[in-house]
Amino acid sequence: MAVISIAVGMVKYGFMDLIEALRLQVEWGADEALLDAVQDRRAARVAPAPAAAQAPAPVARAQAPRLAAALPGGVAQAEQLAAGCESLDALEKALAGFTGCALRDTATQLVFADGAADARLVVVGEAPGAEEDRAGRPFVGPAGQLLDKMLGSIGLERAKVRIINTVPWRPPGNRTPTEAEMAVCLPFLLRHIALVRPRCVLLLGAVAAKAVLPPPEREQGIRRLRGVWRQVKIPGLAAPLPCLPSYHPAYLLRTPMAKAEAWRDLLQLREFLELTSDKVESH
Ligand code: URA
Image 1: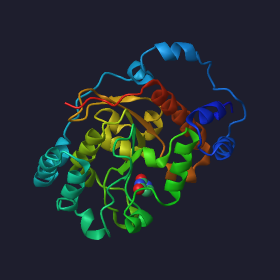
Image 2: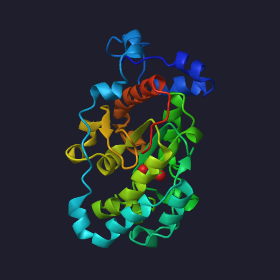
Image 3: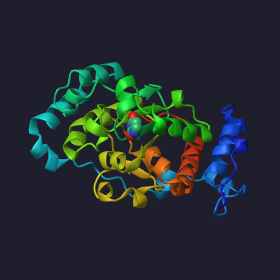
Image 4: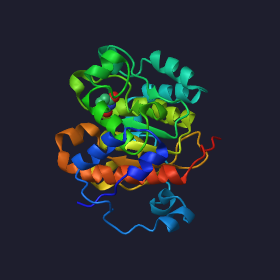
């Protein structure tokens, strides 16, 4: 399999562990300093950001109508609370006091976020697991260690990105969050993204993609969604935000064959971040 070497990028970003990053590439199947398709990098620099070029027209998010019916009070209360938060601290306090999601009753503690409050990249995972529930921080277990390596391989330090989950409490037994749980936590997730105002979002796995993408994309499987930028309207942000779905690191741990595709997604992410430098506008 042909995959590009990232040595130059690593030097440019300066100090991620170069040897580690190269080892990761080899582990992921890189055997040539090439991408699968010919790249005209000069053209890429003058063209609009790849997200804008590839993505379908932005679609307004449906406010989970089916679920609003199932949880009328919860979703409406979450929307109102989240919309009133003008800072991440306020959002954390609001979530800590929010009783509209039953997951909080079985979890040890709230797992709010990790990383920079002004990050250029927000990473959205699924839900805290046992280790995250104990630590109160997202992605600290084996999937988190792989996530750190993945970010490092494209020159990103964990501390400089913002890491959150679709739900901030551990579902019992690590089960997938239900649609109702995701719906009631969604206003907080979207407000979190709006307050960070990143350049783009990496959606890790099917659950994160389902939570953040509007219909009809949210109905598609992650294998179809991954690797294609989607423009998503986020309340509070002036322009649609480029979101890139990819595989969840826990899936990659179970399915090493998928690492080559995940690596291609990371290269796209790196290129996008290289091409865009500013923060987005809020309104
Ligand atoms: N998996 C996730 O999706 N999130 C975490 O925080 C940990 C593992």
